[in-house]
Length: 100
Image (cartoon, rainbow, N blue to C red; front, side):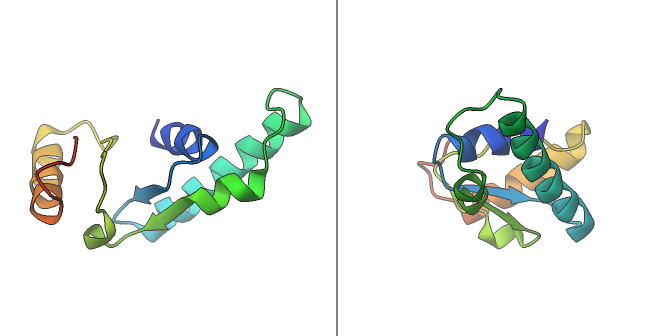
């Protein structure tokens, strides 16, 4: 689900950051997003989409301190303890105006 959210945000020209603790997951996410964009363009489902521009809008990081944003969309594993832990870390990094 997170890949799709990042793709849509990137397509809307928002600076987007995908965070994961595993570099392998980030590499897979990047390949999946680019593959989906190119497939959508080739099938005519995505018109006037510059895949390279969209991919430039999306950054990938395993460094949680890089996650500084106005809006944070959480799409991690469905475990409450993990969600609480990550959101607490993000709250420490981000300002009071950040929307979670």
